[in-house]
Amino acid sequence: MKRYLAVAVVAIMLGSLFGFASVSAASTYPRNETLYTANSAPPTNANPFSGGNIIGLDGLIFEPLAMLNFMTGQLKPWLAESWKWVKPNVFEVKLRPGLKWQDGKPLTAEDVKFSYEYYQEMGLRNWTKLGLKEIKVVDNRTVDFIFSGTPNYQLWQLQLFYGWGQGALIIPEHIFKNLDPKKVAKMTFLGDEMKYLVGSGPYKLYKVVQGQKAILIRNDDWWGNKVFGKPAPKYIIQLYIKDNAQAANAFIKGDLDVGTYYIDIVQAKKQNPYLVSWLDKPPYFPPVAPVLLYFNTKKPPMNNPQFRRAIAMAINPKQIITNGPIGGMPSEIPFGTGLLKKWANKIDLDSLIKEYGWQYGNIAEANKILDQLGMKKDSNGWRTYNGKEIVLHLVTCAGCSDWISTAQIIQNQLRALGIKVVIDKYNWGTMMSKYHNGDFDLGLHWAGTFQPTAYAVYNALLAKDGVANFGNYTNPKAQQILDEFAKTTDPNKEAQYIKELSEIWLKDVPAVPVYMATLFYEANTKYWTNWPNEKNPYGVPIFWAKYGTWGTALALLGVKPTGGSATVTHTSSQTQTSTNTATSTQAPTSSTTTSKSSKGICGPAAIVGLAVVPLLLRRRRR
Image (cartoon, rainbow, N blue to C red; front, side):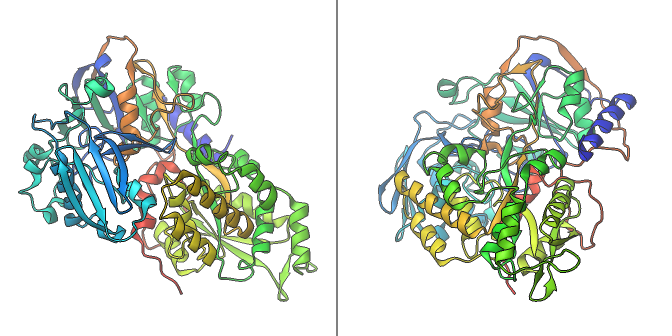
């Protein structure tokens, strides 16, 4: 069994041995009306704009114009009934009829205009950078977004839903018009400030028990009851479950209905057969986004595409997912599962890979390429370049067990080519500085984090200043295609541009997808059923704050009761601690010292902290 899986097994056993007490404060709710989820931080902030760590603030309390299903890449009309470009520079949004706020007042186009302008005044968005000139209310249900010049159509579609760095939650003008937007970002919206939490969604924030839980209560007068149906749970309670060991114990006991924690689900299912995940067989957790091996393309010999191709051919993802982190086999292009399903057939990806791609694990062909490049082996069996042994420094995160195990496997795979790899482990902040300053040879990181569109992925990876272009790859042709791509909404043209960019990716190999990382997801079907899964992907398995409109809200609104009627009473207790706990779901810290620990996970379980990192850091070049 994989090393960090074994740690999780130990954690579950310890949890059972010590009898971790249930995690919520003393309270009684009808179990057949109450859905329990959890977060790895206590609910201390209900700010819907920034800093909120309560699941459902976005999507369940405050709603966007559209919901995104990240697993399928589809935008679902929500407050907006429809949207379209009525002119090359005018984007029209038509609201659903009968929208209303939780205080009974109507939700109109004036609220939409106010909301988008409010986000800009708070400094959280810069719509003018996208060319937005004016927001015009046409009538109560219609609002026009008017642009100067040709807008970036591809980026603007991301502004319909709310997430990391894009979009807006629609807020009531009559509540927020007297609140200074500059001060709002510092508010917690708890205590007396809860009176401002008047949304339009199916749930209201009922109570926050500091350090323990947050309770949402159903808004039975929700406008969406007639459109989507009345949500089943009367209460949604977010518990504070700080680590994976505690989560495993809660799932085994049936005290937790759904969560995004790293546990050994195989072992947990033996004690609670009601547990399910996205897949009904190993790896159970859904593969969602590729982890890439980046090349510093400005540094010899990584600046040679043929050298990069040889490295790509030596990589064997099957060995990585068998002996390293839980994961799936990647495609040679850097798309997640949803984008691959959406575009693979439309761009004839198989033919592209056959013509321009590489064959993973083909050591013989990789050696042949290096021989042709004149990189002969010395008497010690190491490849040479300009008379010196090739020694590549592979940078990774010291607190990321999955990336470290991946780096070690790659180190062994490249040894078969006669290439020496030294693994340099740094804390997260130092690692990112290395990337931004070009102070590395090879490195592991996400493929642009969670990106919902093909344009967003390739723009992040291939644009000169792309937020995930850590290898400082430049290609004027790719930039030209991206510029044209941004100006179209034609699906046929989109497919052509994606095909051209994929061809460039496969030919130039700016980075190599080494495995498809998984999203940790567990659901308990004892009290609630119809959880989203591979066969029914109506929502997404991300149960963290700030991912509501990316599909969490869709999932929570789609569950059905099983018919159980038991009422349970929860009692609080101090959580048992142990040095043998499972790996943390929290993002690595960015302390200034280099850590040698390898207990954390840099997979999607840490994405809450990591997804925004590339968006916040300005790229710096030497």
